[in-house]
Image 1 (cartoon, one colour):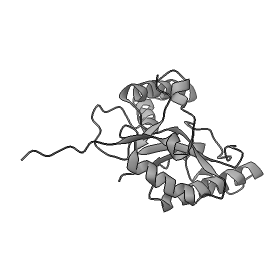
Image 2 (cartoon, one colour):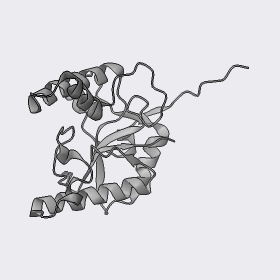
Image 3 (cartoon, helix red, strand yellow):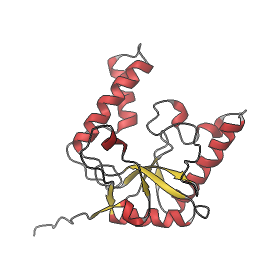
Length: 193
């Protein structure tokens, strides 16, 4: 008996009221300006939005990513990480690139990946569409990007305290809706259902 593959339904996240900033389109890596996600993952994000303070929303930078966009991203990360760590061996550099990119496999089966439209790169915005301060930008390749970076610091200045508070809010609402964080990136949240 043949097993049937279930066709994944992808939807434009903007249609659900989210703010989008398709950075890979703006950077010329994609000719498609819409941000698509798996239908079930977007519905989970709608649930997470209900847990945000009134008037707040999510700004989404990236969800479904093609093989070609992933390849461009990896090349960019490799260049940037080489500049940040010029003395790293090639093997250690590739290990670091993999940490931030997840690799390039042709075939992807897990639903909680960018390639399957189940991983969101996002932040929270306030009533005036200002991004809440999170301490780093999206796709930061330093240890400051780790979700719990500010949790482990003993002394924080006022901006760092704000970043800690905002990351905690993001973590709380996303977990409540069933998302899982990739700990090295505060902005990366995956949904596997």
